[in-house]
Amino acid sequence: RGIVATQLLEPNTVIVRIPSDLILCATKASSVSSSASCCACGGEMEAKSPEKVSPIDTLAVQLLREKRRGEASIWFRYVEELPRSYGCLHHWSTEVAAELQCGDFIRQHNSVRSELLKDFENIQKTLKGNNDDDGSGVVLVGLA
Image (cartoon, rainbow, N blue to C red; front, top):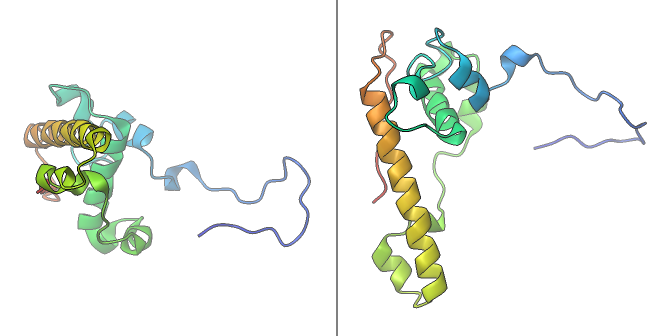
């Protein structure tokens, strides 16, 4: 996905304009306080969270909510094109990572995995503390 120029462009040439209300971003999700369609908890994740929720986690929850809204979401076509799953090294269990027998990798893996699990637990607490009036809640499934 991307844009390719078929001719030389002058510096500062506008190639495409996107209305700001069509941009899906974490900043917008965390700053909206009343729009249930923008964030999984009505834009109040940070206010009700025991720990601050990162922008990437806020965006991830927003994407999950838009996915659940289905065709009612203005981002339906975009969300439908996203991969259903993917694999990353931090998804490996501690036991599987240890099989590589590389101390540096194992330490890094354990550190990253620990942070991800802590973020996941924080998001779970946040979502449990926020009620979705429109019934489009988000269910999170942890790492194995």
